[in-house]
Length: 181
Image (cartoon, rainbow, N blue to C red; front, side):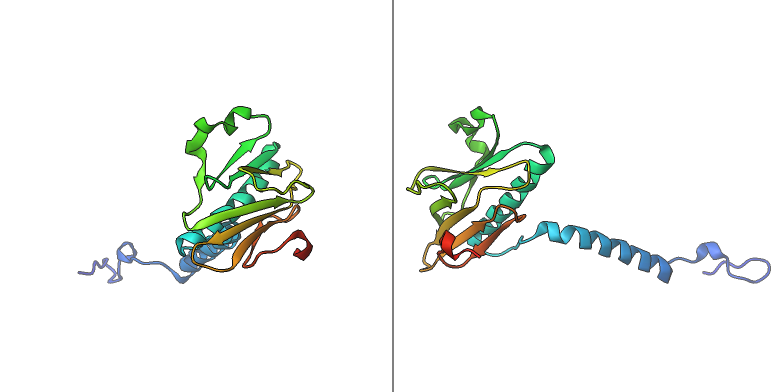
């Protein structure tokens, strides 16, 4: 039922809906928010478990590198090749490295095996249990190669962490420092 006034006009209080300008403003705001946030999400995907494990590693590297700069504190990314877990500690916080903090350790998927980690400048590249990659509050980190193997796949995967780049890069083959470009 339409409400009319004495003059026979429709009462404007009964109209509902959005104007074209209001819709354009909402779309512009949503587009701006997406433009700002999508690059920060980076390589997040909803693929299989191995891809999620790789993306977790990439996002952890990016996060720790940024957190070191923002907090003004040096951080260390620990990778335990035997237990297939990783965790982060801050400089000078020795008690975080003890086994009682196992709840803060992030496991890799069971089908993703850590073959080893190479850190540039360290001559002792023997397999070990706890690899430590340093992230400086100045914005750089140790150059590192994390070698991974997927169960049932012949090729190895190398995750390259560059000192001055914001994140890490996945190479779908085994590479050494000589092959980094």
